[in-house]
Amino acid sequence: MAGLHKSEFENQVVNWIDTRMPIFTMMQKEYGSFPTPKNFNYFWNFGALAMISLAIMIATGIFLAMNYTAHTSLAFDSVERIMRDVNYGWLLRYIHANGASMFFIVVYIHIFRALYYGSYKAPRELLFMLGVVILLLMMATAFMGYVLPWGQMSYWGATVITNLFSAIPFVGEGIVTWLWGGFSVDNPTLNRFYSLHYLMPFMITGVVFLHIVALHITGSNNPLGIDVKTPQDTLPFHPYYTAKDSIGICVYLLVFAGLVFFAPNFLNHPDNYIPANPLVTPAHIVPEWYFLPYYAILRSVPDKLGGVILMFSSIAVLFVLPWLDTSPVRSSRFRPIYKQLILLLVVSFLVLGYVGGQPPEGIYVVLGRVATAYWFLHFLVLLPILGKLEKPLPLPESIARPVVRRPPPGGGGGPLPQGATAKPMEKS
Image (cartoon, rainbow, N blue to C red; front, side):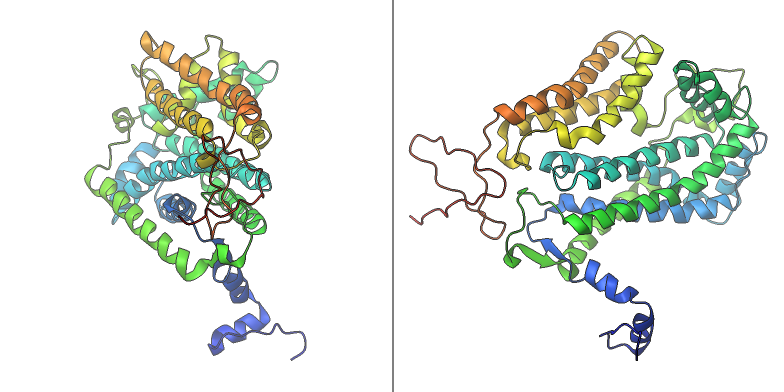
């Protein structure tokens, strides 16, 4: 019939829909026969796990919103009602609260995997930058969600974090007043945070869609960091990686369930089970654990404006990372010095997370400043220099034949540029 898409599905209902709106053909192309590098390891599961986490957060958030009351005199009690009176409300809340932590764990591993294997390099710069945008949206969403229970840490965390914008010259005070909806953290603040917290996950979904589009245009990176050269280098996404992702999802859900059912408050601050009181300041105000590295960077500078600039710069530097790394080789498997530096970067991030949860005094201040210095030193100094000085190992011939050229006696096999081929090693 003229004007209709030619569909090849045997199911008559699917065929009828697909001829008029080829959504099943598109899904088959993008998630069925889509050619994927054959050497993925389990670190490549975390993209799928992030999508599962987002779906869980949106689903539980919608049901929680049906029972939550965004008013300063009722918010805390409405959360307690969800926990005690709403059917399975305790389960929904624990899944949602711990889901945020699981989401950040998955995304942080996903990002560090990209750093380790060079997935931010050409032609995937925009793909990586969209990932950083997703991280920023997640942070904004999580911060606003943390305010909604209206406990002590919710109130004072909102007060401290929003007050940071007052450090911006000329417009800072106006921004804080606009965020608050008045002259203090009060009911207008809670209302607008609730609205934005509900809206932003759908914004994240939109950016995730763009992230996937960029991925399917440029193709996936792989642990070797070399380009796909032959059909033998790839496998169709289904059933090979749908099966592999399914294993990862099962393990992830088991860990998630263990946290929800056996330690639901392990990652929550006990002060947030006390109703918000503007007249009583907690002894130690700390954000959620996934913000602690940036909180440590903020506190590592005595000047308020300097701390705010440094905190935002610690994430903004990721946007220019593809141009800071001057090495022609992607994967750290063939960059022995870079491999050590990226492990040091992970250690510095963990140290910042630990320091951010401690009082800003004594050795914690020193540790925070050292870890902060290395964070920026890694991106702004070491990467540009290392790309020019480091001698990478020879690259494999292809994914299908990961064999490197035998070095001459005495070693010294020179580096091969990206895209070059190595002669197969002779059999002994």
